[in-house]
Length: 187
Image 1 (tube, rainbow, N blue to C red):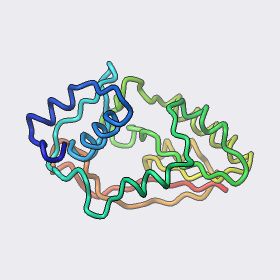
Image 2: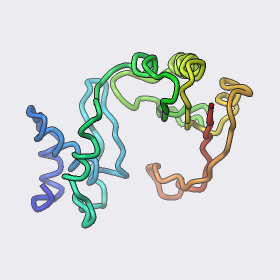
Image 3: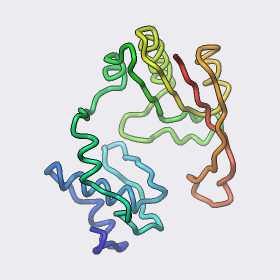
């Protein structure tokens, strides 16, 4: 796919429905690395719809798929609601939660990340299952928007730390600036 990369090929590949695990994996990697800012977004029909980006490198020089495969050989990768997965966390486990951020912090209205909108009720559900997992002894790291609504949601639970970063996802480059994210660690 890297050797075929072009604007035409990108959009043709984006519209294809790959069916085997290895071709779906290759397609995902290609699209993710060549789309706009590595963003993953679906329309309401569940179809990936991110436009082409400026990068054309799919495989990096120091990347070893054999090593990655070996590292993941003992892992189980599944698709499930976050509550179902986090409910399995117990003493000594680490849960890293990076949900779609609340949009109340900038009122941009961009809440349609995928075919199922991640609502404020989902933010509350996430908090509740994380609290339960921490109660079972799991260590929790959570990232979210550095916004008062998130601070109120998590209250004094855990250690809060703002992390500065460049905002690289915006339609216009003038809208890209320095921002912060909230990181909470619960032990």
